[in-house]
Figure (cartoon, rainbow, N blue to C red):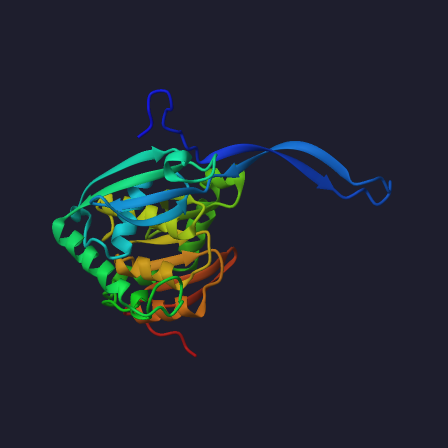
Length: 298
């Protein structure tokens, strides 16, 4: 621990940096390249250690905001706990770079998560089984089975069909205005929760699209809204792990600003998640109709 003479660092989500802007000469004047000294706002990318019942499980690079929501969402979407009730407490502590063995100026955060003994026993068993598997080199996991691609499909819901083009575009348009960190620094993703009519209620941001989604899912779980009609909007592509996280927590629909991957679409089809992509007015693409809806004609 840091002493009184060496206080714990404050890790801000944004920081100012001196840079040199290089600009090509004007075609008419033919002058030399112009170099301008500027201050630019950059997004913080901070090592976040997730520690479950005193045992370090993962270190993620993330924006140091909404870390309680992040820890809960990560634990749920990765299957480490079964419900928000399995999380008994979350404590966030800054860690100086020197104490973490990191280069100067790269301070981190430690998130201590206390979970139920049942879930912790399962987590330890999972860690032991992983250590004995032969690596396949896919996405950083140690076997094909560790990808965790199979789970119960989503139930059919009447309101899912109402997540149509005007609704998803309304939510996506609102998302742009609520990306406050990104407006200053760029390079930051957002995840938002919209009601079934497209009204955007919550937005969280992070340098990682997966982290932003976990923060949002954690907030929904903490406030008891996971089962309510609504959908997730993301300022990213629709890759399979984002679809998986949503489906695992019972989210019925997802809309992304960019295109999905083929694996993301296939996972949406298998789980019954309604999946919109390329949501940029005046159009969007429906890649998967959702549970209980008519399949898209081939």
